Length: 475
Image 1 (spheres, rainbow, N blue to C red):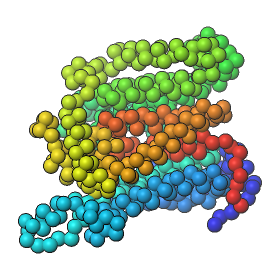
Image 2 (cartoon, rainbow, N blue to C red; image 1 turned 90 degrees about the vertical axis):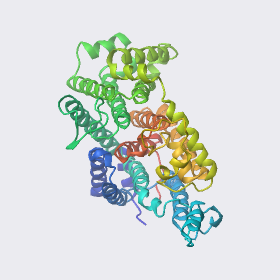
Image 3 (tube, one colour; image 1 turned 135 degrees about the horizontal axis):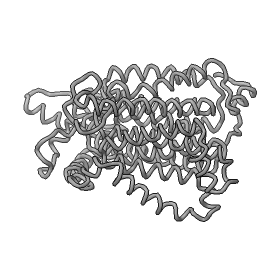
Image 4 (cartoon, rainbow, N blue to C red; image 1 turned 180 degrees about the vertical axis):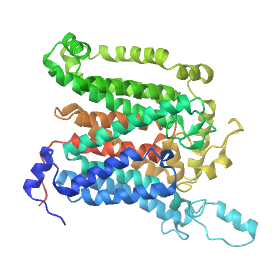
């Protein structure tokens, strides 16, 4: 086991890069955050395999740094969820399950009777499908653990956040140009769907909306941090804060404001209803959290939510005509999704313990598809990640995963409310994670590797930066 010196731990806390391994890990993880959205959202299994290999290398390099007892507690939490996932997937893949022989999918007996030949059954309704679908979840978990280990260093944490923000800005600029000049193309491929929506390098505009919404949140917080720093924080009046922004803005303030404008424009052009509304709400929540002390000092803390709601509504009415058009034509929610949710609940009822098999939703759903769902279209996702995980992996694992996410948000929430120095890290991680989780309850953004590999390292980084910088290092 690597045993770091006390000096290495002090340097890690002070934000100094400790040797070449941490520098290499930071550069590698930053590159993954920046490049993951590019190849069509990294949906191809070969691309995911590349990310898994690179993330494993980053994990190896990042693990060479100082480790504290508190770090081990976080890592044990990740390990507990990982071991539970391995147990479920291994049982789904086994031809003779160790613990779940009675949970073999009924379809194997039906197929045996039809073919007149005894088939070896499995928990999964599709042989070996969990193996082929495991890559994206492995990559997502690895990226969060890497974000935690790398993000313990404050300079590395800043590099991860900036890599995400700058790469998202580049994708948004490309997306706007492509939407104007090449609306029929997705990168170099012909585009047949979502011709009236900006998708950038993603296939689905709802995923693009979450990605750009998260980036808008990051840029807004960085802009707020610069403005607050230029105005000497809470020691100045609001009039002076506004004056420093409009009358004498620094070059960085102008650059960050321009980036915010471009990112918000890309978010609105996606036409995603939930993605746009949730993005605006999360941005206002992040800004309110960042300026909470100033708002409390001036007795505006209770007024801010009302003002934020009106600002969100005004932004939708003025700057998001495509979103308004979809609200007018389709309402707040698609009727087909409610029926898809009830069908997914029926799947969970028949496969409650270990699910129907990771990655098998598209195969099992047709047998449960409600007759009230329009006949056109293929439902490859449940449009609710929680229900899809429960149907594919079972209720016990879903509860464990939900508890893990709840613990993550509690830690991030505690960190963003208590930390004074570098509070931007836990604040951005909390609200970006909340945006992705909430949108995943009506869609599937977190199931797309190009998005999850971009934001999960930030969540891990936020966890690392949520705790006090005073640790006891294991030597």
